[in-house]
Image (tube, rainbow, N blue to C red; front, side, top):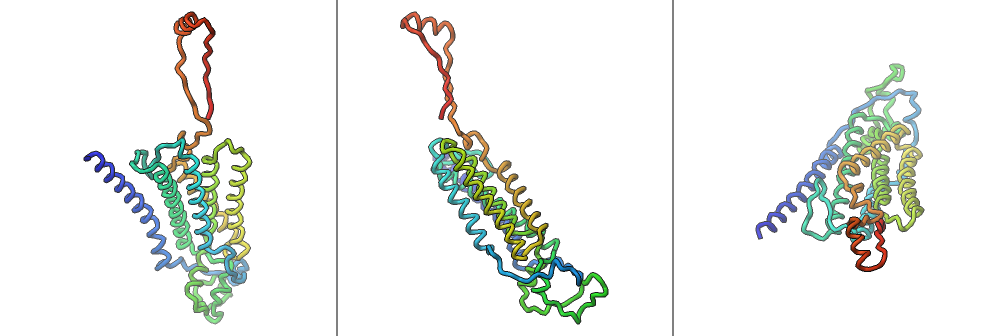
Length: 301
């Protein structure tokens, strides 16, 4: 009983450590959103890039998170159910030890855990950039509505002014243009989904269905990025930086933390090996049976 108890204890400790790691990444984001103050950047009176009207988002942050995470989880459930017949073990978030739980549950835990860690890492890096840079959004002037009596445009760069809008939340958000959070999360989640589909979907279904699903995922991510420009929420450079951040985090997480590209997870064929008999064995078998013996090596799934 002692070895079993030790295995269970080790498994519980590994799960707790994974949860703690994700929580530690998420905690700074929560603190920044609650009490963080962005860098108070000034403006030029003739800067037309911050004079666009305010619009509601075409894709809200709640819809983005639910759809992006939901599609990945659904894809993982389907993908692991399809591949569980050929994958009898799974890897934990930070290691490669077998666990005494059903393989499907273990593999889902591993994949979803890695996705959540990557998503929260993207969120953290995005927030650090937002609050450190404090770049004004394209609709800043419309949201702030600065009191013209409190500053003088002849001075050039204006740093001291008072916003007449009483909505402090909107004013704070209007200073968080760089980098685009929608873009970073959309590119991370959709690229993660596309790569997962690419390495998981069996090749016997053909290349076109796989390519179509990947194209849909990438298109959703790109469309989200473009809406941030058309909604006047971000400058194009904010969107480009956010998209690049999401791609970089996704690739690092997949290639350094996941097991997507291990032999167990990219088996498009099953390699079966046979022991090749030596010449003496073949000769003896032929003479005893009176017939020819053929040795075949077969690569198949």
